[in-house]
Figure (tube, rainbow, N blue to C red):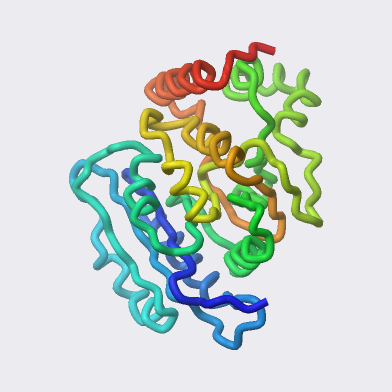
Length: 283
């Protein structure tokens, strides 16, 4: 298989008061992954890629000067680093849309600022999509920093599943371990890709740009939470979603429903919108 490496990959990272060093770590891991990138049987091990940081802070916190030590590597990899700011905190999905809807790249990577990309991840992901044009988006194998498995793929949710997973103490959750295992699709193969996954996480989604734009990107009515569930549902109407265990990341976030009262309120508001759209399934 051969493919033009021109204009192949656009990467967008939304930042909102990111922790010190977080963006630098994410960018460093991306550049290492780009260094290990080979398209099919191409002899050229680099590609023209664009990395866009969307700064959703109200006071323009991000400065490209903080990435000066990466400039030589960016040039060597023919990767352009861009910054979008000034729009304020428009929300996670709306921030990514600023890059998605203008992209002319064949594939788009959507990711959090708290992600570290394994050095072979982009090579595995992009080549998988090149060989599987029926896939609209692919989800990675994810771990927390301590090595614990993180389950990013989900079955279609019920209200009870979210209440149990997000708000119940560990002792109660353990009584429903089989139910949670089903919801989190813990039985997915870690050896081979799996297609027809219902929902994938927005913390790291490698997508066909054509499919993303056909779906009109994220629904900006979701300020935070469930925007990835909604996008997954709409992408699934265009092409299948897949889990690719060979594409590996470390995700330092998670546990979104346990970040304080403001986040709980946003979580409930977005959950209501999602179930109003796709139907209320209680149990």
